Amino acid sequence: MKNTKKFPHIAIGTISVKFPIGDEAYDYTCFLIDTNVVVTLASNLDNKGMGGKAKSIQTSFSNEKVKWENIHIQGEEKKEKGKKDKDKGNENLENLS
Image (cartoon, rainbow, N blue to C red):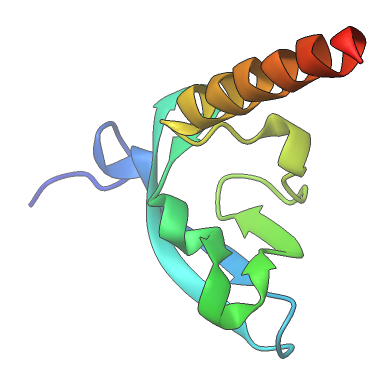
């Protein structure tokens, strides 16, 4: 039998999430890729059907709650850059008037 107290087994955990709609906690799978980096699906943290971004996030790796400023969702940097570029263009147009 494999020792589940060693890597890679120890790197698999759960993420408990509460959304704005309701007080029920939902548990999803997550895993560690570094000492302080956890990977899970973006839809486990931001679900429009449940009211949007999670209001409470905690992993089985720590007793501390995860703060949104520590979350990186892959692909969002492209959306944010596009939004900033669009806003920048609008600022230039406003300066012309």
